[in-house]
Length: 432
Image 1 (tube, helix red, strand yellow):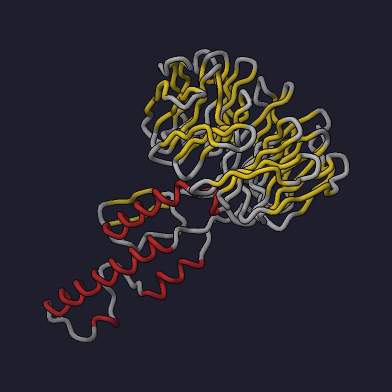
Image 2 (image 1 turned 120 degrees about the vertical axis):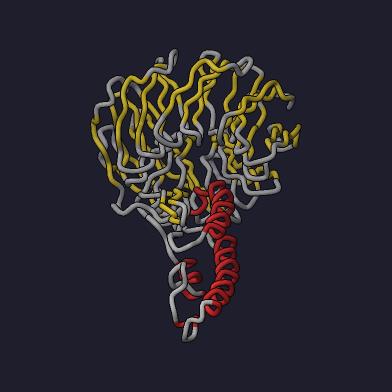
């Protein structure tokens, strides 16, 4: 998927991650587009549409591999990558599952949380929320916690799906919760990081200036860690007090802790390793593009990149050990035994040797065409329309002052032909 597009202007070109062609926009329009892009960047995953792409972290057990996909199916594979069964929902399955005994529990954009028998793929129960479910459920004992875009964190009976309690927030919850020391930690779009007791009562919340990046949060001792789109990695005590924060050059992703260190990627194309106790930098690794969720296993830090690269780094030093190239974004890898698994926007799940990066097998979803992403609509389109109208009036004046013959509206302006039908038509488009 080509998710970067060149936006031309009179001073050169500018690459912006937007969902429509800006090549006919002037400088002012591009500024409006970039402002809108900052908003779109925050809810990128919410704009994913139907297609074969996989963004879910594969959950691997002795009996096989489990994950959701954007073709609306939830898959179960054999350990060697053959399809065992698939369960179809009415919405894309952005994330993966957690298990209660032999039941796989996962969410869908159709607003339901599903519980499916891991052996047969048969439905055991489902629970309806009032909005798309983006997050991976978290099973703890005999209950399951899952957030929904309807702004609620739900606690359900894991065997029956019956609601036990729900906790309402100011905005959608699509981030996977952490259960630590009998507390539930989570956050997402409203900028608050929440801590609840096991009965759903708010113990405290920690306010930030932007969206929380933690799927799930990480923990080490009495400290919980989460990233943020305000460019900070936060370390907060389990009592809600700031212990330290580390500022990166761009938005930081979900963290992972291992042996007193914290690992995370950033939109600034870097992988960071910090001392978990004080936030001091131990090492940085420069990648070719934005980095997704990292994890560490057996002394190796695995880091997926949005340019399709999957890096294996020495967890002690940050030195690159090997890399693997896919044909699309890689976001949420996992590992089991001597293998690592990475899902990609190119519609494939890859199984690699954990030590060498050698490809063992790959599995393609039911659709080989990558998923679509809805483009930025209202704000940027309105900016384009308003600025375009203003520029048209200025151009008419310049045209008349130069004593040209004929009606300006039937001629070509310096920006090329673009009217409201052109602009509004872009609202209906999608990119791949």
